[in-house]
Image (cartoon, rainbow, N blue to C red; front, side, top):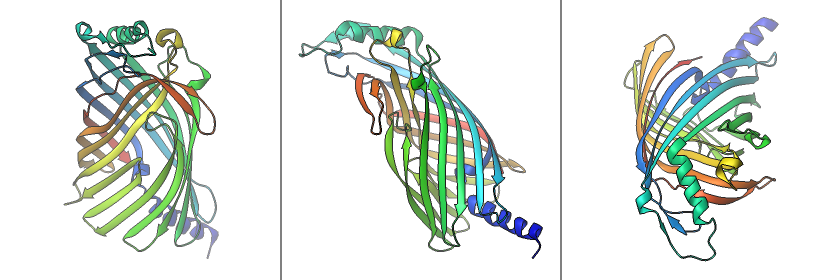
Length: 327
């Protein structure tokens, strides 16, 4: 067989396998997310000061991706994605209902708690997440696939950037072809997707019992269950995790140098084919794992943190709309 033919067959094999990783099918994405008003928790980290308020917000997300076949056999494929997410959070507090509870020791002191409340009430939060995802897929044999991910990123409020705003996250996981209908695997990642830097076990699942039903995901990052009534429409249920740990200015927030922000979202999803490889998608759901907490980190292999001020949002409604193009 001629080398050119071998390369072409290898490319088709790898691209066909990688298309099972649905999140990596997107060449271009532009999406807007709205977070309607939701109540804020209850109290400062040590329960010394109670407050009442609410938060609203929105995010804009943009990503561009590319694929490269790395070897002549076509068994190694690199997907490179560059993305930017801007998140704006607006706060409203009821200062009249702030009360001090006599708990000892008082950490943080009520004045510092009031400083957080005042700053957020006046200026809100503007968060910026810039990252590059490099996903290397290697076909080991007819049954096994191996994926490695490197993710350099910058997460900051751009108010006094420090080295803590930059980090590299990583993941490794496998995929085993149990049958034509089911693939699964396990892995491990170091990620701040929950708004905290954690070591997180991964579970890979791909299940397509019929042409109209598809379950695809990498837990806990995301999982989608789709019903495809025809070529134009797809409807389904999805669970996704959106978040990061952002560097913030210590001069503004006292002893805190990080903000953990995250939404673990469960949603109804509707996808419509527009033309060619362009789609529109609308999601409506609720964040069952909302997180907004100011912390101070001690970085090491297993990071430790002190929670300085926990906003502790209630369950948060989420609306998302976007357009995307597949490879």
